[in-house]
Image 1 (cartoon, helix red, strand yellow):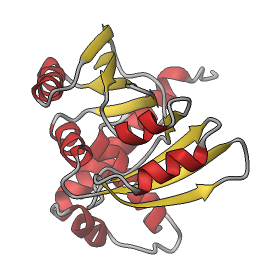
Image 2 (spheres, rainbow, N blue to C red):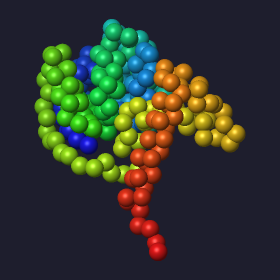
Image 3 (tube, one colour):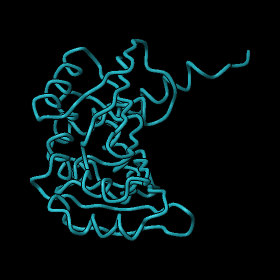
Image 4 (spheres, one colour):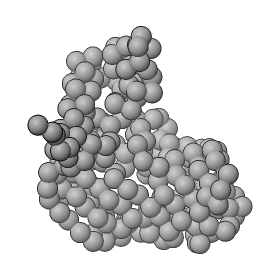
Length: 217
């Protein structure tokens, strides 16, 4: 596993961030990347929500904006991007590279990412795509090591999204509320491929528990 800590200038929501430069964004973890059109959930904090929201609604790359939580000094947004947005291409690139986003934050004009890749080919593919699309990329750190932990951040994006979908649709409920065939149809893969994703995801999570747990004798 290769961990990459990097910053990308003017990547997403650039107009909204420029209109309210004091705003900071934190992408909510554990999101499904298979939605069409692409959807992004993030927390925003700052003192100019009205200007930020107006810029979101006027952006040509955004098809819809919804405030899911405004009970505190931060707000949770659900933003639907257009099919032509760069986010869709970026999601597709991560899926093809078996990469995942561990954390993502933004403050004008930069986005900061902690990304995980299974090999160097994925790192190079994403890096060259960003540079080829005119983004300024600054790599802060690159490290190698075994995947640790027992949460969704240790999984590939396909494993994480399939496992989350199975949980949310009630696949693990008793009695089951959905079938493996239905999950496979949702992700446009074979039933066998969907089953293998679930098994690998659960195995990775259990391996994390076993590595980090001190077992008694």
